[in-house]
Structures are given as C-alpha cells and as structure tokens.
Image (cartoon, rainbow, N blue to C red; front, side, top):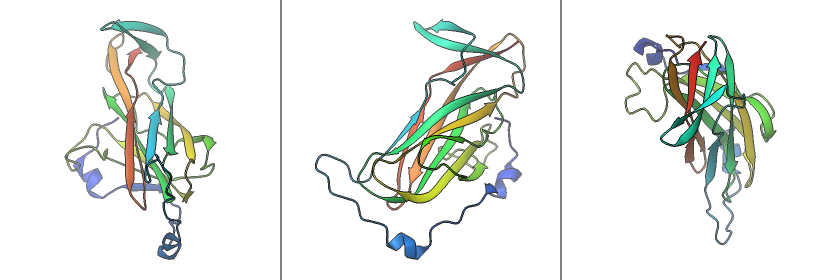
Length: 207
C-alpha cells in the first residue's frame, strides 16, 4: 500500500459510499441468540484464500515449502477471495470486513470487493483507513485497509463470499522478489464479535 501522511488520517476515515444503518428501534427488535447444545452463541468465522485466484508464474521453495511467484507489471491487478460466516446461533444487524495487504508495500489500497455468493448481493458501505490491528493508528502507517460493511439482518449460518481487487503499484527493482500476504479482519455487532484470517505468502517480481 502507498504510504499516507498523518494529516490524511487525522481527518478520519474517508467514506466512499453510504448506506443507512438500522435505527435503534429496529435494533431493539433483533431476535435473541438461540440456545443450541454444543454450539457457541455469538461466533463468526473469517476465511481468506491462501493465494490470489490468478495462476502463478512459477513456484519457489522456502524452508521446504513451495510458495507461488507472480511475475507482474505495475498497474496489474490480482484478486483474493474472502468469506465471513455467522457460525454461531445469534442474529446481527451488520456484517463487516477489512482487507489489508501486509509485507512489502506493493499495492494500492484494495478496491471495492464484488459479490461471489451468500448474502449481500448489493452495495456495501465502505471506508479506508489504517488497519484496526495497528498499535498506533496515528502514526504514518505504510499499509491502508479498505473496510466494507453490510447493513442487513444476519441469521445463523449466513455467509458472504467476496472477491477483492488489489493493484500492484510499487516494485522498485525489476527481477527482485517481494513477499506479501493478505489479512482479512471481520466483525459483527449486537453482540460484538470479531475474527481474522491471513493468507499464505506470495512473491511478486516485476518483469
């Protein structure tokens, strides 16, 4: 991701699209958590694919493990799938997820995700900012995450699979391998629950 100046973050998150959140009255009418033996009440699962959907150019072996190498050009876009699942027995009023690329600062801010399957086949509210896991969100952080949120009643078992575009914009030296991973942080509300998942490492090399 491209570096951002502290002043850019001081203004808060940049809202890219807006969707009206449920009112307090509607939230009060949300169903309670169901009691199901052997199953957690409030629980969600975050999942992210190990690698982008694009076919790697080749593989390299690191510590006995094969890791994919993508030969790319500046401006080329890769795509990484994610999924958030309501794995518990509660109802929620929002589904949300943040995508951040970590490792070498190789990408622009992730683009808006697109629907693959499950709930949420419409526009999600979106914003950009520093990753929620950063210990000091006021400093000049090299990574920028895109946060997306769906305002809808989420029932037990509901899932949302999304496909995120990530565009290469910073590989300083041709022929050099740069390692990156992708992290997906998810959350719901009422009651608040969160989870996260990290992809496997891939390598980028500029032709």
